[in-house]
Image 1 (cartoon, rainbow, N blue to C red):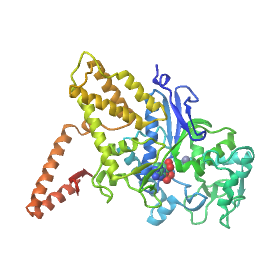
Image 2 (cartoon, rainbow, N blue to C red):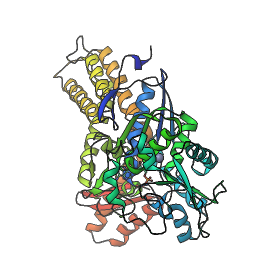
Image 3 (cartoon, helix red, strand yellow):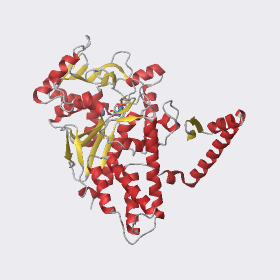
Image 4 (cartoon, rainbow, N blue to C red):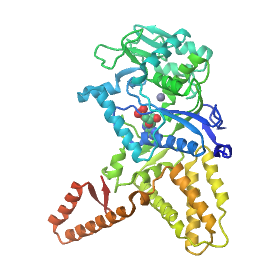
Length: 494
Ligand code: AMP
Ligand code: ZN
């Protein structure tokens, strides 16, 4: 029997504000859409937090035996600098500044995005469609919205008529706004706008002569509005109505409220059954963001090359740090928080690796089956990874008690615990087993580097800076960076 029949998930649905029992549209199948990155710069750790959160959801649904179609798009056109449909296209702007083709920008940062998510051990989605690959589908949806009377053409552009839509539907429900409240906030509309009302949003924008990313359409040579691509691609691959839609909290408005409006305008139905939003990763108490520069790149953490860090950290430790918070809580990034996560991660891995050496007793002091159900309960409760991790540490305490001859475990229970811990740690949380990954060679390399660090410290103590610098430079030349910190010298493999 499939596990999902025994383990019932509750999901906090952002649109109802309640935890709801998850029942997919088609039994045993889940359609899930997550808004992907706008590929005009390197992803920062905040972006990664959102994608790791949905990787956890994807992994858990798969673990329960659901057949999941996970669609995560790449935004490679249409996302303007300003959410109110003004400013330059982010990708076109980068291309202009660097004097390269927009598709070179897209390729460079899509590759970076994939590399980084691979390092974090994220599973690839089932389909990764691009906005530019779905211009035809977007044009077709615009035609349908116009036919239904919810959009109008103005000077070669097409706008969604928010006031008209709001007469029969509730615009802004997801973000908890109502139209009356929005009106005073949007008064400073640009004089040259073709919109009937400032709340209207673009479905199609006529391209200015200098705008290089353009396609022919019945209304003008132009480009689609940002919100439209997600409606087009989710409908194409998951249907007019599908199970789960995810993204960061900051996408609730306008992006997701506009997606709902577009979908409802065409079909009269809510396109999404469960809306999930991941909370923000902060740095110095403020949202990590590309635009403000208040961010840290994953590569800076893996190499330790950022002034706020005292050392480098492995991707799996960073992933563990992220999963130690629930996806709906704000999480603040700091060197100290990562140091604490690294210690916890090591303690967990050490206990897991010591399981095989535990003596088998006649009886058990630990109810492994009840523990397994508690771990599932945590995940069933809106994917509560911090509670799951707390249960894993409960298992660590039990293992250590058996090691210290303070408790007993039967051989069968030990094997059951090992299998369950492996499922939760590797399959579901997506952590990587460093020992398995680097193996024996890794340990020998570690020993060798530590020896060199020691020799360098001795050289420095003897004021033999030629030798000490030589060791550091030559290690760096082969891709091993040393970093001197408060607690001695650490290294990272670049
Ligand atoms: P973007 O490329 O800006 O469209 O962002 C890609 C994803 O990262 C979206 O789902 C955003 O909501 C999410 N995101 C952006 N900043 C943060 C942050 N500081 N913490 C968590 N998620 C974020
Ligand atoms: Zn989207």
